[in-house]
Length: 131
Image (tube, rainbow, N blue to C red; front, side, top):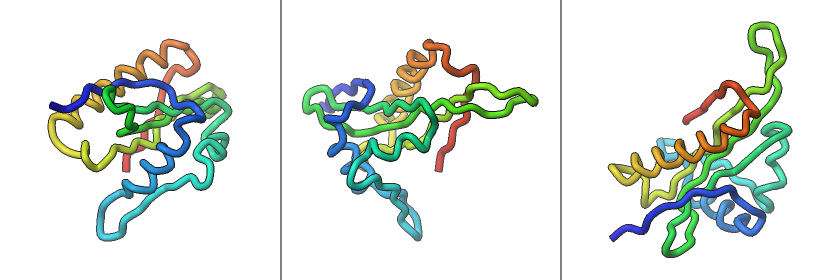
C-alpha cells in the first residue's frame, strides 16, 4: 500500500533531498529540461522575491520528499498600484508519482496546504506558472 503524504515547509535540513528531486526529475520532452540549484538549494531563493517558502510533500512512512513547490511574494503593479502578489512555481513531483489518481490526490492536498499558508494575508492574489 502506498504511503500517506504529508505537507510542510522545507528547512535547511531538506537541502540535499530538494537538490536530488530537481536533479533526478527533469521536465520530459524531446529536450529534457532541469532547473537545478547546486550546490545549495536555498542560496537562490532570494531571486523569487523578498518572501519565499518551499513546500515539500513527504511520504509519512519513509520521510522521503516526493514533491515540492514554491510560494513567493513580491511587489507588482496591479491596476496602477504596487501590491504584494503571490507567485506559485517550482512544482516538481518525483517520477514515481507522475500520473494517475495518486498524483491528482497529492496535488489537491498540496493546494489545500497552500491555502493554509495563504491565510497569513501576505498576498491578495497569486500567479501560477506550470510548464
